[in-house]
Image (tube, rainbow, N blue to C red; front, top):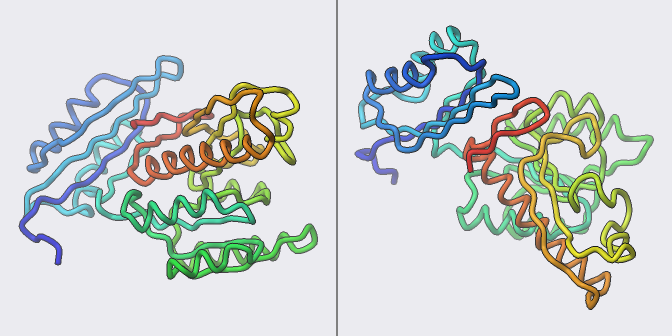
Length: 289
């Protein structure tokens, strides 16, 4: 049973045009209503004159709940023209995982979810193939087979929208889902879809990227996690990483190395999103990791 005597924690994230008094006003509001700041990060982007902030704060038993904090913060947000949210830090994000036939990222996320390493719930997994149905069912998660062909793409995306709505999905994770989302769906889910892409964008697009890398004799292979936009693989980048390779490695060795780095990068991006650490900044992101 939950400890009803322990403080509760919330996370506040905000962005707005930079101006004097933001930090003082926000922290004064928290202090006046009994909050204790546990973690605070901020960033002033001098290029865009935008200010970004993340605060994790605790409240003693009997203090304002998350809904009340939103009411208290609304006038401050309006005064400074903020985009903002306040969320119970313990409340998991409801994340829909989507996959095709490559299961390394899905398997990694399922393990991290079961072990409690990522603050998310997984109400369902969607795939356009049945290859990974047994794996998903072994975790007790509903599996939805939604096949996609060029002629049935509108119907498939309509079904996807139904699943998102039915499960109150807050985040969609493309864990090597090998179908391109339509422009309309990408816009409707803006800031809520994370994709993993082989390599540093935009190198080695298309089929067999690691074979392309082998043919070019690359010394590094990597992966990029980014938000999905209507521009294919051009969305705001959340996280990237690389692993060093050399001439002794065959294409299959590069594939395995690439799969490992893809899994790590996607897991970090999903974890940071689910901890409210990623703020959109135009075509870029601010990540309070």
